[in-house]
Image 1 (cartoon, rainbow, N blue to C red):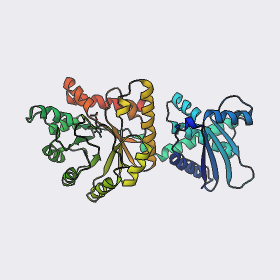
Image 2 (tube, protein in one colour):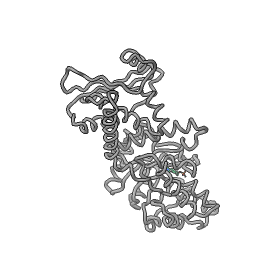
Image 3 (tube, helix red, strand yellow):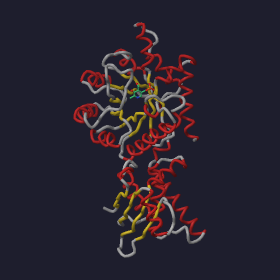
Image 4 (cartoon, helix red, strand yellow):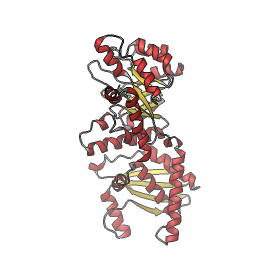
Length: 392
Ligand code: PXP
């Protein structure tokens, strides 16, 4: 294996998680970029106390640093060791407003360049050469992820228009009519959840929407026989599989793909025969991402609910980090990435700024605002929230 990754964490810090597969594929990509594809490199991820010990021993410096490199001098094709403190990288990522894995990638590039002879400490000229090569390599990774440059598209969930209609059991307001207004206001997709209990969207709505939606119709649904058959009949542009409980007010959490793998694989195979891409609504969790890939999903929709409902800024930052890392990991694994649930006019911009997310599915906040300013205006304001993400 050309990349050997090891960990040196004290027990209570095991939680500082690093997505090994993601970083491994980045290091392999970088080895190609520096024209050393056949070389091996060892990377040790550690916490601050471990890094402090190395910094003291080898550089006689106090406290931790972010990265240290030790070139291998004797073995051909072995570049050497890169030591990285994940704890320091995490602090630096927060200060720079980037994700942990973006910062780890910067440090890996820095360490790798040291291993092949670059040294910014020799002179200003050498520093300039090294830093400009660092930038080039970082850009090449970004370029490799070309899709990250696009802003996510807004898909509006019109379930709650149907909720209002069902309150009186009549025909108004009509979610089919609402979908048209959303599209004219700039939405790039319409989402409806045909629940087993039919509490809001009805079969008639889905049939009509299939005929009228000009953008993309995403049918959100439980993985149950009756609804799967309806989806096969309707042929939406995609489906999103969600967990469904009779008593819940709205979808409460992501689908547990691991324990439902067999049933999911069966449905995804049926959908793929019908040419319908499948998304699975999951919590931002590495194991659920792996499982989604394994059962054959094309997309995952990352659950943003806990981020939106966070009770303080610290908790919100933690939840945000999980979504950001999950988006990056899912993309890197080859999945397409959507996100949604609970997003409103305050929480959307930050999520929209996460690279790799293709579509945001937003319902309640837009329909609630529409009651005061009209649906057209409410959709346009949400689109502004997404557009602002390009500027932060
Ligand atoms: N995504 C999924 C999977 C959902 O179940 C819902 C709610 O129907 C949404 C997105 C939209 O959530 P909200 O209505 O809170 O914007």
